[in-house]
Length: 360
Image (cartoon, rainbow, N blue to C red; front, top):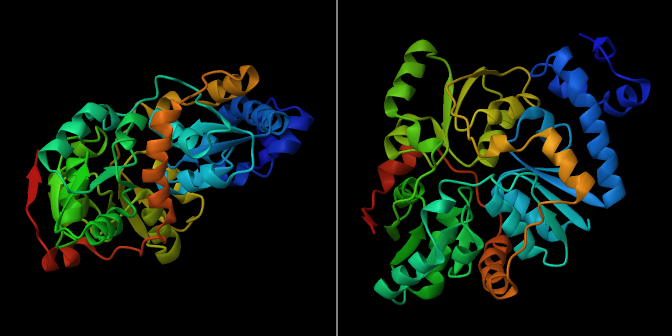
């Protein structure tokens, strides 16, 4: 259906949003577009007026990701963009810990989040006080903390990591501290999956992502039976047996690169639902197949509350400077490392290493 056939659009809105329709037409109906396009046009005008940029995570819905996102990607990519963006205002189309990270890296900028309730089960699983107790129990060992954590946790951290570079960061920390064990918190499954790729010993915390922990090896087996030609890509926050049964394991950015570069005929993304819709715009010849799980926190971010936060400049995210300064060192160390290499097939890596994880 041609863009101009979408009902209810005035001439100005139609002109300002026409270039977006080709990327959204397979995921948005014309009726939905008639409601979304005016919001997108208004948000993009407000960004210019406010000197603002929108950082949109890969789990945002397509109309946000493609319609208003200025920088899109995974946590690591958005952290890098937050640090170097010249804009005066940053709107975090993601969850609260991401907005805190942006503020840590850009203390002089105004950081907004459209909904203060957009939290994270994994970030809520650990506190700064917990990390202090861990450090007291394992003195002298470096603390590597997943970026999916609150600012007070980052402040107790030696270096942050993401799912894209966790192996790289763990091995860097072991070399820098001259140790053979590293504390990697808070995601238990990420820690176990990192342990399968490195000889460095891992001490882990029992935190989990409510989206990824629900996937099972049985899900993979069912997909294999129903779609024998499909390539299955899994996020490292999934259980070990899920990654062992998949064809590839990697961050959302690595999944995106895999699909765009390899162009598989059929693919299954074992991660949050919106990921497939967003990647599909750059891989039109690939068929994307479920399953997926929704993140209720990511889905709190909408076009309406993005518009409202820019219109009213509300829901500002702040971090006390003492905490921000300590967390900044950990995040900056992560950013300063070179980009990680694209991971290989997980089951091939697993055959080389299997190191037991000590769970706190």
